[in-house]
Image 1 (spheres, rainbow, N blue to C red):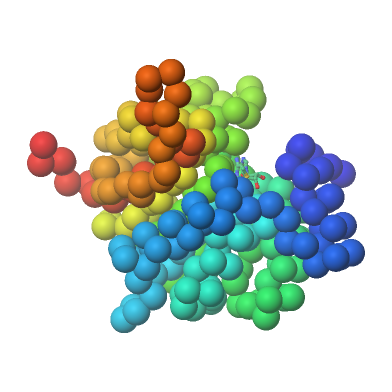
Image 2 (tube, rainbow, N blue to C red):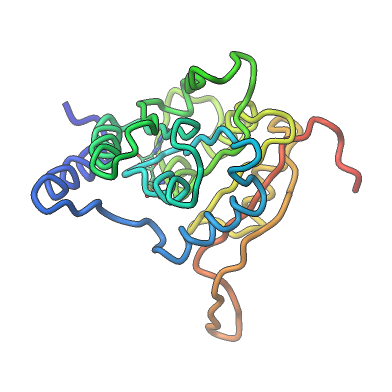
Amino acid sequence: MLVSSWDEVYQREIGTFQEIADEGEVWFGEDVLEKMVEWALENAPPAPTAPYVLDIGTGNGVTLFGLAEAGYPPDRLCGVDYSDRSVELAQAIAEHREVPEITFKQCDILFNVPTPLESMGDDEGWDLILDKGTFDAVSLGQYEELEEPASRLYPVKVGALLKEGGLLLITSCNFTEHEIRNLFETTASGLQFHSRVNHRSFSFGGQTGTVVSTTAFVKSTASPSS
Ligand SMILES: C[S@@+](CC[C@H](N)C(=O)[O-])C[C@H]1O[C@@H](n2cnc3c(N)ncnc32)[C@H](O)[C@@H]1O
C-alpha cells in the first residue's frame, strides 16, 4: 500500500532506476550537495576516527553516497526515511554503487527513534546528523496526532539523537537561516549555532537573498556563553 506522496515519488524513481539506472533527483542540486560534503570534511572528517552519520529523510540516499565517495566508511553511514519505497530505492542504488555496507531503514523521525548501528554503543548518540530538505517536508506535513507543530517537535527529536558535541547540518529551501535558528536553538533541543555554508545569492526588488540556507548546530547541554 502506498502511504504517502513520497512513496509515489520513490515508486516512480525505482521504476526509472530499474529501466535506465537513473538514480533520481539531487534535491537542491549538485552544488549544494558538494558544499554539504565539503563542510562535513572540514568539521567532522572521516579520519582519524570516522563519525557515525545519520541522514534523516534520506530519499534516494544521495547525500550519503556523496560522503562515501569523499572517503567516509560506509559502515558508519545510516539513512532513514519514513517511506519504505525510499529505503528500497536507496538500497538498490547502494548495491549498484557497490557500497552495500551503508544502512538504510524505514523510520518516521517524529514518532520513532532510529536504532543505532551495531558497532555504536546503545547510549552513544550520532556524531553527525544531516538533513537536506527533510525539515521542509516535515514542516509542511499534517500530523493531527501531534500536540505541537512538527516544526517545534523535530528539532527536539533531532537534538536528542546527537551525542554531546555532535553536529547537525541542515539545508532548507523554506526557511531562512534566521528562522531555522529560531526553531532549532532551544533549551529543549540542546542545539547551539555552529556555522553556516554560504550559497550563491540573488538580488530582487532591492533585496538580496539565497535560494537555500545551510546551517550547522552543535549539541551542547552547557548554557551558551552569549
Ligand atoms: C525533499 S525530500 C529530500 C530527500 C533527500 N534528503 C535528498 O536530499 O534527496 C524529503 C524527504 O523526507 C522524507 N520525510 C518526510 N517526513 C519524514 C518523517 N517524518 N520521517 C522521516 N522521513 C521523512 C520524505 O520521504 C523525503 O524522502
